[in-house]
Length: 83
Image 1 (cartoon, rainbow, N blue to C red):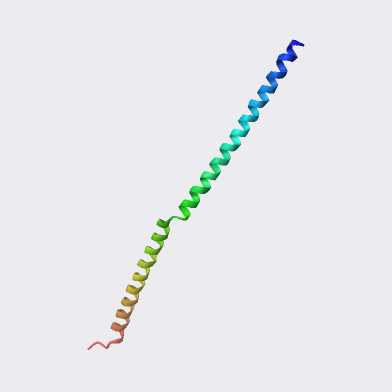
Image 2 (image 1 turned 60 degrees about the vertical axis):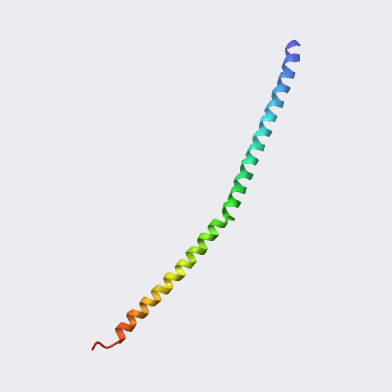
């Protein structure tokens, strides 16, 4: 009888501690997931990547103009009769 009176409260206390540990673990996992999602949104929404894309687009436009100019120079040179 004495064993039961000491064992039951110990089991209840252990179950409460285990339940608290599981709840804290779940909360920690949820916090980690939310932080990761928020950091991904900040990275994807950053103006830095948009600025880089605009800069690359402008440079590619300039490169396209230079290539067209070179093509014009080469084709004009081929059309002119050599004297």
